[in-house]
Amino acid sequence: MGSGKSVFCNFLAAGSLRVISADALANKHLEDPEVVRALVNRYSKDILFFTEDKTKLKINRKLLAEKVFNSVTETNYLNSIIHPLVLKDFQQIVEQSAEKALCFEVPLLFEANLQDCFDYIILISAPLETLLQRLEKRGEDRIKAQQRLLHQLPDTEKRLLVDLVIENESDLDKLQKAAAAFIEKIPYLQYKKTRPFA
Image 1: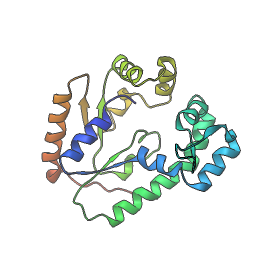
Image 2: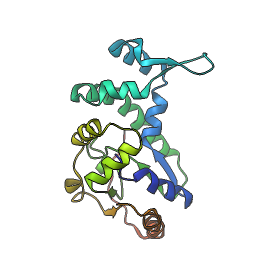
Image 3: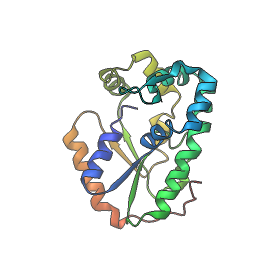
Image 4: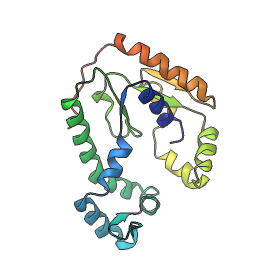
């Protein structure tokens, strides 16, 4: 959260790589009727809002996040609904892809135990204070952001589990150059023995 992984992925996409966002897929599934029903049953209709044209009810993602992300139990509940759907999407994308390389943006990769599904893992890292400042600029409450970060594996542990660490304190130009350098490196990367997503 706040590390700059999405910006890095945007640079990869600008370099003609296909990037699949776990968050984008998860948000898409928040519109699945069966997912909406399950969440309304758990949290009430208060989490719904009408679209501007008043034709469709949708999940208020900000309100859902407030109800879910301060509780391990509720986070696990939401993940139990959404994660299998996203993993199924991941697997389908891999099986149907003709690209030589696919990039996945996965915010909670280790927490979801997905590290064995990938050939190469990159960590975009930034100091805690930098993360919090970025999240505050995005309108996040500092205390709530700190609480959410506590539920994530710290970078000190992730660093030992990844293939490449990219430091992203502030310089976008430096991050863009790191993305370009990685793209050049892709043809020379070694495949690992990976397992399917689903």
